[in-house]
Image (cartoon, rainbow, N blue to C red):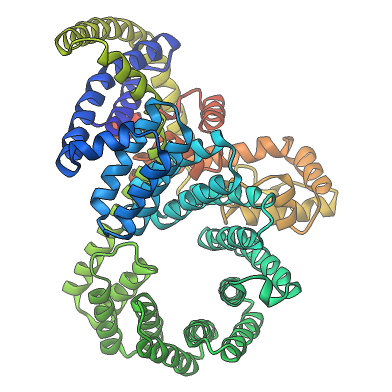
Length: 603
């Protein structure tokens, strides 16, 4: 059993037997004891792997040499000169273990960052996240701002690739704060651009545009010689801004921004960027339903990609997808499906490919129009598999840091284990586990029986309350239209607020009184007044009610959503803290979210 599966085991036990302090104490104690035997087994496996790759002489050098600089150079040479990535990673693991045992945070930072960086290049993003997190903590201990910045940026990049955009944004926001204390402008530009890119993925297009504008305006004030990446940063920001403007259907502004980018790329003889802007222009004309014009720009962009060597495969399949969309609108279904199949061959097993879900959806629709049911089913099965795998990866990414928090326990446990013989340790663990298991089972059985009837009644009441709601996009319980309001401004605000609820604005973690008032083009005073006088509730009460209703219904209707961790459910519902979500959920329903999910699964 892995440490990751243990966390789920603990969650399952608690959901079955309740959440009393007494129950939690014994269960966590049991898990810690059980972890000790698992950690020993894991460490033995790692030791065997290291022994196979590293000679005893090399291991002694890394673990005992007084010259840390020589060890670091030795490890760097393995990566740079010898080009032996596997051995270099093995060196880093041994060096990292030394840093943990000696509580040397400089060693911990160097080793974990090296591992994280190499694993990022190898697209092993789970290992990147684990080690980048270690490097963040180590860099914070040695109070090195640039190192903390680099670790947060690497962590954010891995979350981004895995599609865990909220986690990615949190890392990038921390990096942005750190960049304020670094004189080098490049750190600030990197932060703002990363944040803008994540917000674009989260469909917070206006916020993303603000970040891109900030970069562009700052760059326009700078001398080009002052910033080595001036051209690339400027063009990348124009590209991002143009995409966001197109997404919010400000198509004329988007055209202007992309045309500006084409001229800039021409002036600096950067054909690849020019092709990016052509692809963007094709997308804009597609949205304007000018398909012939869209195809012209898309084919020009694709031709530039095809004529420039250097890893442009991603750009080629994006161009192909956009061209396929236009062909579909022109009812050229054979050409559409042929181009999409070419894309699927290019992409292969890379399920993280940008817009891959959209490609399969288009393939399904095209097959439907062609009357080919067999292909339609085949594409649908592949799409479902991609969605499932990506969802699983995001869930794993969100839980990885919980696993990393056990590292301190592992080190302390190893110290204790080394002081005792293996046989004595094993016997004591078996006895302790047996005693704890018996105690826990007896205790929680009594607690469970006492609470079962009460919880069952509360659950049935919740289900009865939401039976009338057909979907998550239900109408509010007290429609604004049925209320006679003397204040016309309050009436207008509440009507607009009712319409805004259909966008699920309230599940954004950035949602607050100010941001909601901004969306309604009013101010916080008017919005508070309208809610207090008409709905008889504060904004926070209103927001919590929407979020919990959303969670109740989505958990009931969406089986996949029920497989999320409580922390993940909380974040998807708009809460930054799982503790706050559980408290509000329990306050409204009288039930713990874990219990509610379990009952839904059983019914």
